[in-house]
Length: 186
Image (cartoon, rainbow, N blue to C red):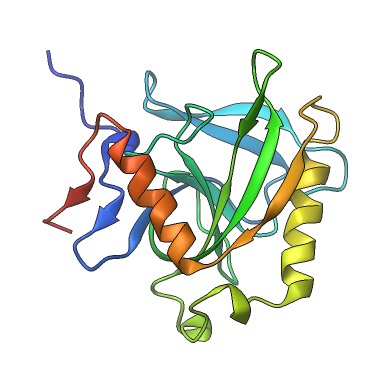
């Protein structure tokens, strides 16, 4: 019996050049959810520290592999939450370079892609890092630090990169993945 195609097998890059992001923890969620390919379902990782909630939809770019051996993390800046498992066609506008303590205690990169939903007409003018207010960047950094404050990850922010670096991270991550990089049908 063939295993059905899961969310992790969706192409990273769509025919129109946008990037697929699978939502795990939607805006407002006070728990971290993670897609488990063996179950083809979202699973509970942990509650966030008290008073902390995801400021925007958070998930991953399917068919990619980042330095931490997980798919590339992505946050989609959208005024309303979607739901776990929703695939959002997105435009990467920035990348937050992050280093943290990995599973074996060594330092690993765990960068976060920052995207705008392709269907978001309110923010269609936002195309690159320079159009993302400094205050927004600082709030995103504060959220990521607070979300792992009790997890012994020793998060370190290494700076921000723009649209080109974000896109390159997707391409590089999808080349390292055993999955297909582009889906001509999308």
